[in-house]
Length: 307
Image 1 (cartoon, rainbow, N blue to C red):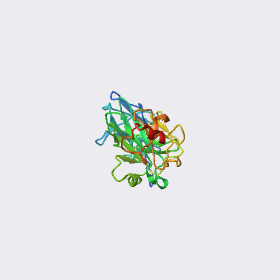
Image 2 (cartoon, one colour; image 1 turned 90 degrees about the vertical axis):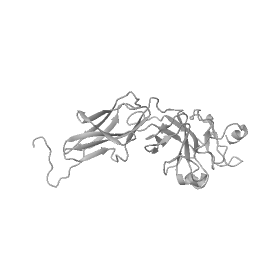
Image 3 (tube, rainbow, N blue to C red; image 1 turned 30 degrees about the vertical axis):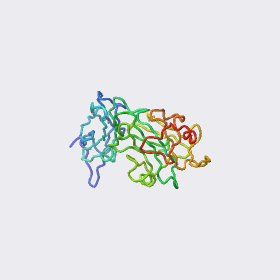
Image 4 (cartoon, one colour; image 1 turned 120 degrees about the horizontal axis):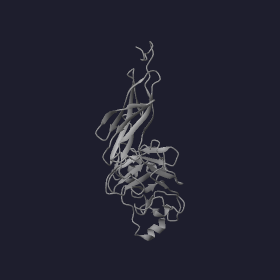
């Protein structure tokens, strides 16, 4: 048939190629219609159809994409209610009936974004306590970063990203991750290590980031929104801690020796600027208080001793 690509005997059809998947608005609000687009090509045949698959919490639904110009395919989605978390992926099929998804691991893993009339920003979700050198050999996997929600509403953190500096050690929050109103979420290196130190079931909720460690000498810890996808890669909040002044000098021994040995650093109050080292102090408790209120600053003698 003229205009239709066919396969020769023994030839296997390859799937379409999907690249540059993106959305047009970084922080959509409940009044926005969002354009999702991608470059879709097929080296052996033609792209027959493409769809955006969207999930707002009750399963994926399909929205047809249109071939707008050249190899660009696009679809408009939304508007969506405020505080809606959305995961999505693209599926393309060629004239041989062979399909491909982007990302490749979809639907198990998809892109994510949030509809937020007030985007999560600095001071809303904060890093409230950090254990970069916990007690035990190599810390026993009990390193943690405690997040705190400074608002009176639950916040969905699906797809948000926690990273250590710029060395590609990072962790993406799974779909369905939330932090309770005025509540905590503890990011940990190893859940087993945390339970060994603090007791099973005593720290909750926890998310495990994996094998990489925090640095005893200090490093910048960053929190980013879900799937920046070509938008600004600037974190909405960051803490560039150190084990030297003006950051708190955390010690376990009365003579001031040791670098950490169990104590954490904690914000004096969760509404203070977490990037300012003068707003942090060494934990009053010898192993900190993950998932709970930080020790108060009312006992000035204790604060001075461990600051």
